[in-house]
Image (tube, rainbow, N blue to C red; front, side, top):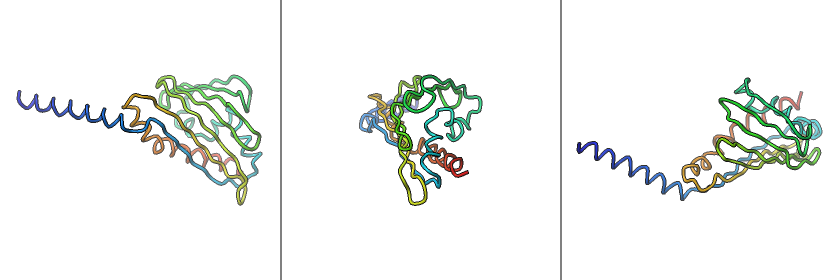
Length: 175
């Protein structure tokens, strides 16, 4: 009985400690990756302005070939919207909120199952041998101290997906 009380005290103490530390962690996150693509901005932009093209280069569609996608709004650029349902990648929706041909796409991303939204941007600039693309995403996970741990790990978790997606985009654009 004494061991059980001691074990319960340890578990409760750890839970309280994790909660308190969670309140001290930031709720905001920012993820950004970039690469140089040996192709003109027009060719790269054509692959990022159309939501249907994202399935060709993002890794999430590759990890779940059964992902169900639906498209609405404009066919490309500002106002283009799509949503997806995936057993492994989660359910979500994205809308392009701003588009400047051959320069940038800004978007709003939401994961309703987690009550989470974020904003992102793909920016194209002239590079030394073609087009430099930077992909960023940022958001706030809210006041829940346990979600602050997610914000802390977001760069590590999502950054690798951005790198893989940009590598696939580069391969497509350089063909």
